[in-house]
Image 1 (spheres, helix red, strand yellow):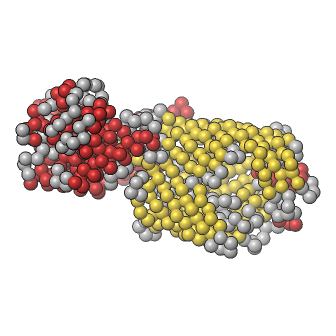
Image 2 (cartoon, rainbow over the protein chains, first blue to last red):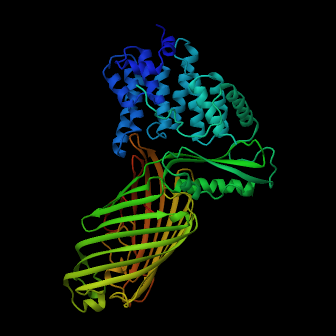
Image 3 (cartoon, each protein chain N blue to C red):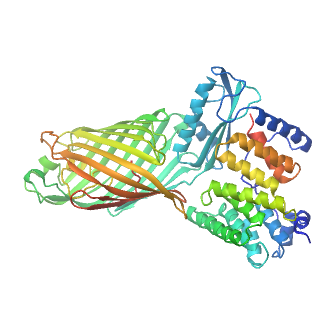
Length: 194
Length: 443
């Protein structure tokens, strides 16, 4: 099945309900997506992906899930170690699969969520710009344009450039007006406009 | 498997007017239009001429997953309903950002004047990312661990522990939402030896003492950068195994047992741009210490002053200067005299004239940020320092000669995550080498 189609067909809830180790790129992506939305606990998703270490995208998914799990980890040092483990896994995967946009988006999202403690603002921006570029160059790849715009907007806001952030969130909404990313962008636009 | 976890992607809280896609579309179109047609953050609206007044319609907060909104608003230099000129508003936005940053509760702070639908009404957004609430510091013999901003209410609880001193402390500003800060602590110092400085021909004297006590303080927050307060210190001291050539009670206040009660009024005015990494501004603090025989065994009075200044002449470089000085009455017990020893004082271990009843110490440093740690959220900083200072014994005339000096290079680490932690190592090259390594933040 085409990867892009698979992502849209397999909803996060279905992936979670299956509760079986994912075996395809789309299943791994859907499981991470479910964890990002809070529909699956990161620890559960992590256990499922760990059971299928040879699945495509598994390395990056483990990294992203470790970062998500760090949010719920008690004790500051354990939290940090979990976060660091996540970034190490993401970095290793991205080094091997440079032109896959999804791991780069995951790494950027992780950086935004962890206040750039382990991945700098400049590197985050570079990841998102590269991911957008790869998506434009190869339409068979999962389309991450809206999410890249949303995250680039978050990065702009975090660095104090609200004008740019609003513009990017507007573009994210335009790229995905009915999807979850567009809804997020709309919420941010509402909140950051007087 | 499903749960009711909040949505991710960094958006964790907010207030939203509508869920209907069509209504949202209209709203978004409006927001985008507003965003693209009005000026950017913290700058006057295109339709607001300089000098025009703006009313603060609303203050929003975002990203404060732990810190209460009430605590954040305490650090604002304005409140909803205030009418200000645009220039004044811009100044207060900048100060508010600095105030929030200096709480050290957050790893990132933005204060935005949001694009306006009505040019005369400002909506302010306090956008933050929660930081770590654990602070760790240590000197050679002591470590200090504190949890700050407990339950998001700016309460600090901490412990100091080491070979010769244990202390438990509590601090809280904005008691009952009033501009008052309280603090309390209890401590125990196990017995340790104090060598008396060998000035004026009295070398080879020492004594041991152990102490237990506590202090309580109440401060009035005049402004967010200035406060006055009063602390009361009470302790019971046991002295033992002393070796003195003459009169330990008269010369050093050493007796078998003693009660010390002292009132310590203080005033502080902090105009630095950042508490952790100051690059410009000044800091003033003056503190008195008064003890009366009516409530204890000692009768003395004294004061200490501390003035600091910072300037950044070039990017990444900071010139920092500090002058500390004080005077206390000749009857001050040895253990309460003014010390300029150690890594925060004169960095020359072999010197005497570093503990007395009068003191003066000047320090100048040039600091430069070198590089960021690849592992932790930490910066390495290089430093070159010069210290000059001395103390005077009771009855000794104050003459500006025989000063002690120290100078040399150093390296420092400032970590913000996973815990706030500072470490520094400095090497004195003047006369005998002296190496100082400590995990306390420099001034």
